[in-house]
Length: 290
Figure 1 (spheres, rainbow, N blue to C red):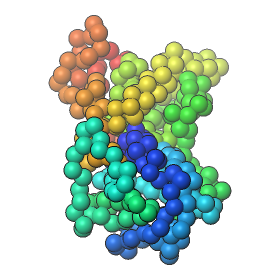
Figure 2: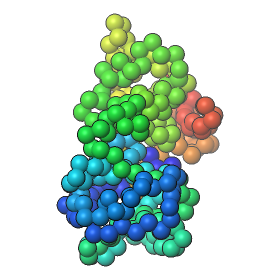
Figure 3: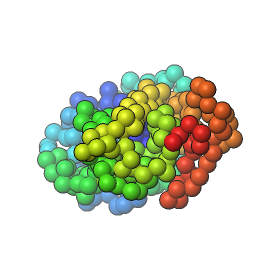
Figure 4: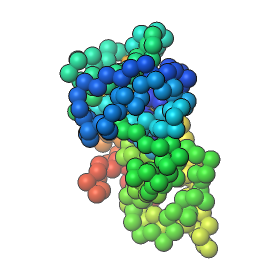
């Protein structure tokens, strides 16, 4: 499933085409994706101008000029491509899936269009009132954004104080930190030198203050996410950018999917291992992650 950097990459790729454009027509080529489309979905979008395109966790949110918001989720294999005027070529352009059976939604914007393609149909789109998004079921319980100004070591100390669950499990808890996924949690923990099964509360110092481990972890989370966004995300199976480009952060993985390889930490002679945690694969170095 695309993680935060992949979704943010898609947002940045779509924004120049979508923001400020008026929707002239919407084609729905099936009645549903993961969920049925809302009643009159295409009709409600027609004629609306798109005022902004934001990301919350792994959701894309397009604010419209009538006070509504178009919410989209990519699911496991969903992708957008831009067709017509202004279509970007992409530095690593690859043919996108153009099988009509998988082109489920076409948003026409005059001389260009945005096509949503999803072979597995685990993605979805819906509408909600912009002013009520904070209390919407998709967003009401989401935690802090790890790329926001409010995310730092103090935030981690507040979230993890007294928690005995493992760091890996706590970091994947969307009610604590929104948008972090398995790949980037593994990478951040390795950069911070922290074992994935270490209790989350261990990063909290005396009187609830953040310890040095919390400072390293907060910095590592932000660094790995920002680097991944700049690299266009990680293309492991289905992910492509909005211009058809491959993301290439997977070439910078230090531990993820590198079982049996030497740890890249300078001076460390450890070998990357894999362990299952709560049904997810955890990749780590048992020597330098403590």
